[in-house]
Image (cartoon, rainbow, N blue to C red; front, side, top):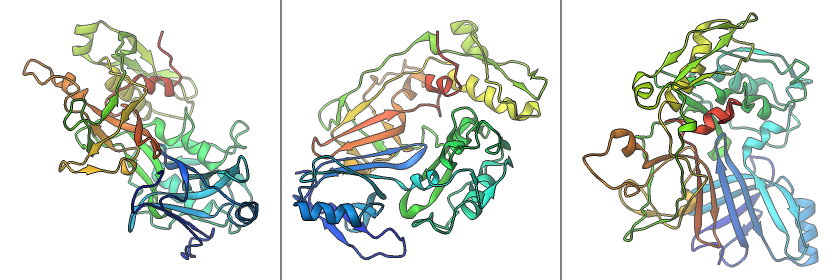
Length: 390
């Protein structure tokens, strides 16, 4: 059975003001349910199959494309929201796929009739400006007007969607571009990264990534209580960078190196140049990127492509539905490394992962987590900056 007791899929008309449930799927009515969350993004994809007659298929095809979808794990508790965008496969058992409301950012180009400009300001101001002025009135759905989850971010950046290179970008691409989008920049004294996501009720979130000490979930390798069914990982000295510099301004002025003495004493010096973006005019802004790389890559980082779970527990020890775990939250595996007074703090921290993506397979009863340890340091940080390891 793909859905468990009390879990439902509710489908509504495209307009957010219409809360009348047009279709209700309960356990036994659908199969092959898989949903994903991701940062940046928020609710990412939701897919299921439903056996239909030819008449049901064509009614669904004609009336429910871009309909809104809520997945509830119990009454009033929504675990996923978005809109239906794809209907494919055999008509008598079609695959129906919805995408999260981040997809609204893809509906409009940055060079459109109502909003053509470049930004040289803070990320929170950019996002608020797009939400207020960037969308056409003809759009069926819209973001929630609540901006209380858009945090104040002090780093000023330049986004130039009017230039020839980016004029065809949609809002989502320009905001999350690998080289100059909002999430490239670190923020605060601890150089945490900034995440853009759309969560419950179409609310936009712009948040500094949480600390590894802010644990949301726990799972265990040993029984009881168990939960971790697969955890392959590696660690490599090739991913260590303990001295970083950056260039800024039209003349590409090189800032001084910032380095980590403890890491250099232990592993030797490894230098890296933060990528030149051409938009920063002073060493302070460029320094945020070099400091982020140095701090996050000074120690070898445990890397894993995925962690597979079949049980997860909240901070009070209560087992919770796997599908409630979201990207951006923090997972701790207490028994991943043996407890010992001889272990360093850095080793102890390897038990904890920031979640970058979740894939919840309801038919298999498993949750696959792709961790992203950029808040503590991970090779993906350098890949994002287009700096490959040797």
